[in-house]
Length: 344
Image (cartoon, rainbow, N blue to C red; front, side, top):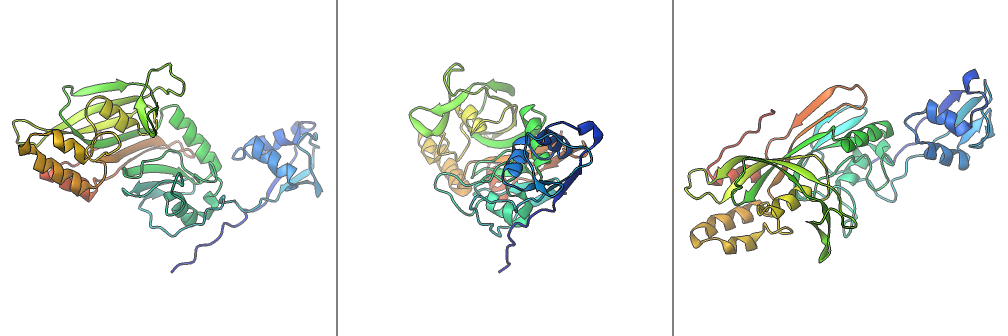
């Protein structure tokens, strides 16, 4: 069994105050000098005695003196009580700023209700100890997330500067995320933009739902949907469809909620009406195949297939694609459809 190292203290930060910075508050000076640190973090470091000016403890509000040497002795990053776990990661890309991972179905992304160990966050702490505290103690490095039973691509920031840049890009809808879903029923449209606000389901707080836009807690949400195939491929009455969904926003369970709202729940999605009970509404001739599909998948048929963004450090355009996992491929094969995604 491998030994997982504890996070080590990063090297000290230093800054020599320039003549232009003379008289400016020290915390402002350091926020400019160290852009990967937030001003609140700098103030916290100063308050806890980690910042020295010419060898003496500093104050945030103290005016900087030209020529003074500022040294910040940084503590080891905290994991918030999380113990790193040596869980294998499928790494698609990695450099000093970020990771792109291909998450398997069944892996929870971060600790939450009822889940305290065995998450992707625990694996990230083991793989990159310095990621502790980047973006939040319980969600180290995470820019976005995937549901436990959704497979596919996600990007993780390894530094605070990268996390900040990617979070801004996500909010500005500059990170493109596309998913493949196998759904119940055949949409009457070929391409459609679903725009419907999402909020907590008042009847079940564990579920999300389409809600009136003006309701408290409602958040705008938009998903673009394209029908790829109607399945079974050789049937006169196809009962399923393979669709590609591209997120414009990223609300909790957004794709699953929007598709279910339109009457096309994701196959295997027990939360939003796509589970085994759905087969009971089918004619007997179709029920067997549908039941086999749901049982073989054992999870919702949703896969994050494409991810595109600009690198937060270099500005380079980056695009990644994830092959369909075996369970998804078997489901499509059973429906007579061989699909190999191709970047547009």
